[in-house]
Image (tube, rainbow, N blue to C red; front, side, top):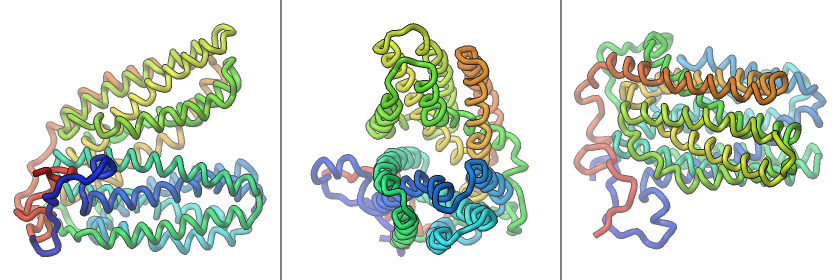
Length: 446
């Protein structure tokens, strides 16, 4: 075995659980960190707005201002954070952000003013997003294109399970509605952040040789100057509106415009989670090249467009069963869109990024989804309230146009890629015995 490296085990998978999980070694450690972190983030993100509103006494608009401001600051800080990740190392940055996040969460329980809330939330937003970027960059460097998208698919399924468990756990604190109960959510997430960072230390360190033209300044912005890449990142970010539709617009539509019972909103989210867990890995097949990922982005955008008129017509008529059936169909289409566009994003982000600049390019890629997270809820709720069914038809047109735009955008990005520099990775840090990146996430069978 190479120094500091890892090779795939030769034993057969032992039992059903082993067959459903990535292979032992770095892929399984990454899955474990994702499960921990997803659970912690699930109960923290649900309870945080309520804590600062009900316990600290901030208004709803002040709480919303903090979320929007944290997103805006990240968009400015992303290129710097990405280059710092490339400078320090992807694993090292993931560990550092986890350890920095814990004391910030403890400080958050002592906040008593708007200024303190804004300061802590901005810093937490930077550490959380930088940690996510560095972990994804590590996975991108750990594996080659054949295994990379599958590894992300595993982690996407796992984080959905973790988030669901975390949201369920947060309900216990919300039911108590006391400062001490809410504080447990902060303490729990702090402990999870440290545990996740500690687990990352068990992973091999990856040293990636930089191209001579890449530069060493932390203030550079090569990824921002890569216009085709930025365009693709924003198109991918816009497809993230599907998640906003599922978790915000659809529940509001069910409550205000349809005859479906209110609990259906929660059941549909549960249906989405189950489908993602079951089919995300399978849906990742074929997204390991930019060309294949581009096709999946286009197909996912079409599925997203089809879901909108189905949601709209669910408000017609007075039959509860018809409304519930249409909403289930729409949820399946939204889930198909999520399965396809998420794998497309992974394939495009890493297929179009230089291996030595995964941190910077990943951070810039994240700006697209951050913009959507700020604008998407406002646009969707405004259209839904002002235009009703016509608003959903307009969204269908928008997502159809998005599907059409993906083909030329991806082709432009592919045409402008330069060749990967030779010897861009240190062979002593590859996880396999022969100095190559991981090519399989399954335990090999005799």
